[in-house]
Image 1 (cartoon, helix red, strand yellow):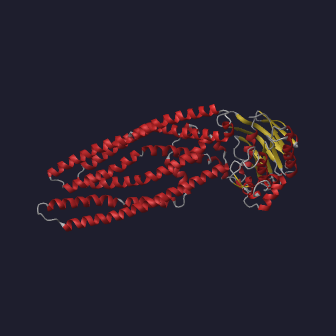
Image 2 (cartoon, rainbow, N blue to C red):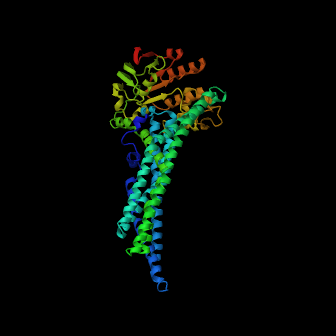
Image 3 (cartoon, helix red, strand yellow):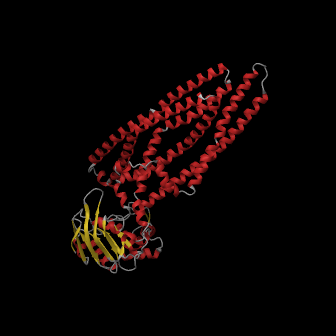
Length: 569
């Protein structure tokens, strides 16, 4: 996603929580409970330093009478012990609730991202594959890890500051003024450094995405790289990404790392001022030693958590950047959700008639890929979609799958406007056979019925027999129960293509979309696929994208595209 697109006003951590919080069970009341427990800790934060100061004054008074005031020591120290235990139990309960809440939130966001990836909305086309992978994995991990480290510290900081300032104000107004001035100075320095470090963190996370992309490309082309082809190009890409990543990491770490020492200096200055003022108040007789001791503890309680958060500035900056990047992925689904809100029409049974009425579409700021396309594919017809590369054939497929929305014009299926067709109806009535079939780790049976969980094993094997997959599966150790890997290396490329065709056969589609179903096949294998399409889908509307002459000739009609328009039908 472009940098300008992500720099919207409402793209931070708060916006991410607002967008994802409602998806977590009991999110609001659980947050309220965590905050309530945090506020309840104010009692121990206020009481303990005061009681310890009282005990100190009792010891000092006893020096003049040579007798240790047992009662005056036991009661305050006993209360301190009890309050500490209660505070520790409350803090433990709060942290447990907070950790569970973070885990539930993380699971909810991951499930939502998986749902978006499964739907493959057109909005995801704006992300490079490596960048998308980095956003969905690395950035979300960064958010979860940082939340676990900092939220508890942030809640403690709020409690400690409010409680400490309130009691110090009772002792002497100058103590809270010094504390507030110290906090403002620490916050100002942290804000300044954070502002300067933010562009470097943005660049750092983008470079991580680029690095993931290079690794992904290297894995996908590993056979070529192993044979030594284009290895120089791979090393050049890695060197460029490494240089950018090293520079952004250095500058972001340098700036965020300076926050800790700066806050320590400012905190030390404030501490010295509190101690000196306390000494003057003791000398003047307006405060006791115990009260000054309590004041010093209150100052430490107020500034300590802020110092911790400042030390974690690097993680907080990474989390803020990651929040914007994850939110961009979640918002890519907004357009689909707006369409889904009005999509209530179901498609009829039987073969579907496909009509394009002056359809236009373009990607981003580029020129129109599809410009005024108007044509009709009769129900039950088999049509070859042809044209030079880049003319918009794959875009037509994605428009029919409702993964992209036309800029203007309308697409209808048997008279139903595609924009208003329910998603489940589309899934059930439209089948896709991509050029590179998606294979996941699982049995052959699971791979075939992944789109139709209700299909029986008998139905799966019948579909395999109809498309000719049987002869490949029989060679596997456990037949259809053989577990194949994510890249499908156990099956030849022709068999992987047949798995995709079998997925279409196990359902009852009214429209089948095929993208280069015979690409890279030998003539005999291609002839088998062409004959099987004609036979098995004879009562279904079929649209085949192909550059192979025999595959084009095997179809009843030919639709030629040029400049995004139909030039021959």
